[in-house]
Amino acid sequence: MQSVTVELGAASTMELVNALSTIATELATREAPESAAACLELTETLATAADMQESAMASFIGRVDAAGEQQRWGYPSTRAWLRSKLGMRESRAKERLVLARQRHRLSQVVKRLAAGDLSYGYATTVADAVARLDDTDCAQAESTLLDMADQGFSAGKVAAFGRRIRDVIAERDGTEDAPDEDTKHGYDKSWITTTRSLDGGRYIKGWLNPEDAAIWEGTLAPLAKPAGPEDRRDVSERTAAALSSVLSGGHKATKVTVICDLDTLTGGNAPARLTDGTSIPAAQARRIALSAGVSPLLLGRGNTPLYLGYRERFASAAQRQVLETLYPTCAVRECEIPGTLCEVDHVGGWALGKSPTDIDQLALTCGWHNRFKHTRPDQVHITKDQDGRYVYRLLPPPDARPGTSAGPPGAAVDWAA
Image (cartoon, rainbow, N blue to C red):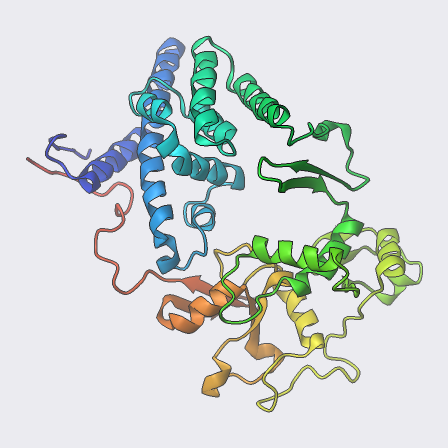
């Protein structure tokens, strides 16, 4: 059994975190008590302690986010770091980031969360509700929503009232119409709703069925690529710019790649798939081919030039189609950017003469990681998986100080004042 000795007032933050990690490791390996009543009480106590830990985590995440520290470690955004490195689901990463970014405006929430007087669920609900409000409305909404929590309303009801507050403010300012509820829409048909913001912009949400999603990807993905090495826009910003280009009439062509047997297009029942791996029924594949045109994918057969050697700097369109079937996402293991939004990367670095423009010397990486690999090659470890695909793994920065992580779970901790 491990022991932890630490004087709380004199211990550093790192010492406290390491001590907490050791205690959590020990607790996780113990069997639950036989008494159900004891387990109920222990669960409530542990949940309160976990909520207070979330308060500290929000502070840490906020500092990382403000400084952009995650980029030194190879993550383009704080949310990407939370998803990839810490294994959070998108929804959890988003709510933690929102809380971290709203802390400076939610003094009551921060104080009560740290004191164990407010659950993490209520704290994130309030933070999400005020994220689009100005400071004056934020303060009033915080008090109102906390009063509801104190009265025993569930976090779901508090969230619903938070949405109502936004609607009331929009109606007061004459800037927004209440959107239709998502539950009114099915999944067979595509739908989009737009809502005006307080500053005249618009929030957009919706759903695209597989057919329309394929057309969306085929149209916007080529236009959403970085404009060059100085293009610092993230994927969402480039996608919005691509959509504006299409809506303004600046782009007419649509490219959709459907991977299937010839028999499928001529009436067979074998399912096809899109470049992101989505399986689609044969009938749907034929509809896509009729409405958007279909790009034939030839994997090294016929006259398709898959091997261009050192003479060509850029990959051909045919090569890119092949790469998009091999890499549904960026080759960086921790990155989730779709392959259709990625750039073609010379694995060995074309400028150094180490990697010809041949299909087996190319991979897909998002624009951010392509630049990261070029500027910090010592932080990217490249291997091949059993299927012959390149796998890029991120390494810590060389100047990372020892002790920047809490160490492996279960490590012995024994600190004295």
